Image 1: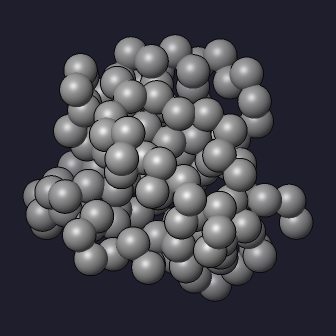
Image 2: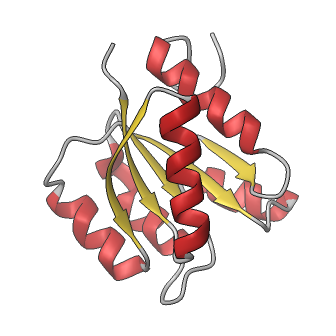
Image 3: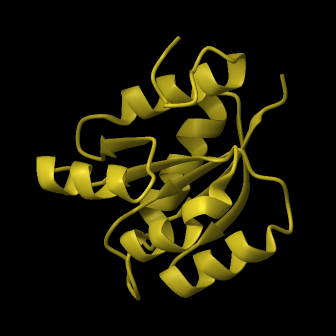
Length: 134
């Protein structure tokens, strides 16, 4: 399989750069685009200048929100997986993200290893459509 082509929506340059480094080093991930706010993310996802297998979205952005990105992605997601990476992975936020089409929600503070493993499973084909492991 090819690397998991990933688009990242994260407004913190430090978090984004560290996330990219970790994903590219520890999982078969190739970052094909980034956005720091909702409008930029929606524009990129509508145009899709590069094929994308996975979208990783932070909820709280400098402008707009990750929930707006999820809403806009909606049906247009197709085969593209969508996960949320947030510091606010409360049960209510997890439910809201799932209702908006997120395959998984990961907590930034203690589920990065799970996100990296998820990306590895996408790369090797062992993740199912729902995002669970086969």
